[in-house]
Length: 292
Length: 154
Image (tube, rainbow over all chains, first blue to last red; front, side, top):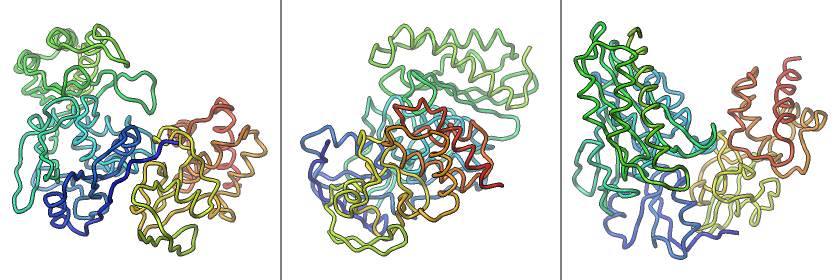
């Protein structure tokens, strides 16, 4: 028996009402799918005094592709992302990530906003969204601000979200035909487990050349990170298998992971180079490239 | 708080605490004992129910969140042809040992066969990824789900 601490659960009928509750209530926290928060609450004596349910707000659950941009409402479930043709074609790395997240039951409850707001260095939606150059929109009563996703993450389990704010939307440019993205991860087993290391890559192809590249890693730093040094080494170059291997090494040498229950720092370093290499290869092939 | 939702085809009005999981409400408040309490952290799948038709772990759902929604457990699917085929296949193929995971396995398998009547073995493995069984080693369960799909086709 792992009883939940006492709290009051509020079920607002609109985003405005939810924002009102978050700003007026003392010690309040939003809850969407609950897949991260509920197990966390079972481990504490005293949790937040108020929980504000946002999972039922239909206005935050949507997925659109318009004018070259993909926008996803914060409470869109992982299942919906997995089934989406838009995500499969326009955000291939995100599709890869969601495919490997949790279990059916968890994907049916868990939301993209919850995964990001939990701000775990191991959040699997983060690396693919980082390489797609995503922005997030954060709302509070009467105003909203948009920032790069990279600025949203502050530290392990810490986001830049203020207690009275709510993440409402994730937005990124839809992948075009000559571009590809991919996500690879290593866990302690294949299914239903947290990543020990994860890597995402995005490539824009210009014939045999890489016009633009973005690389991100999860679980190797206090937050999910981009690796601009490696991206710079790749852009403008003619792509070969050997080049991708070198870029993996650049990433490996650039990061400073830690030892923890899921893996050692040295294992993480080694495997990150391998995963970056795999992600780059997949992204390149999806962009229509060939490997020599 | 007062709560109204649809449970196994019946409209239910009941009292629930804000911090009461759907799992506890079903077992303690509504006497639905097929829903098992395993890990209480969404890992084991023994408490799986259908929420608006989709499998979820009821230990992660707070009772007030089901207001106005549809909850289904194996009790509500007794006469459903897909569930009948699954139940018979599970019994005849030796897919049940201690039985603790069985209701959750059946719910996950039911949702699979309902949406995908001819699943591959990989589809079955993915569908029950969130259901832990400590007895069978999964082999007989996977065989039973594939057998149920054949029974339904016949």
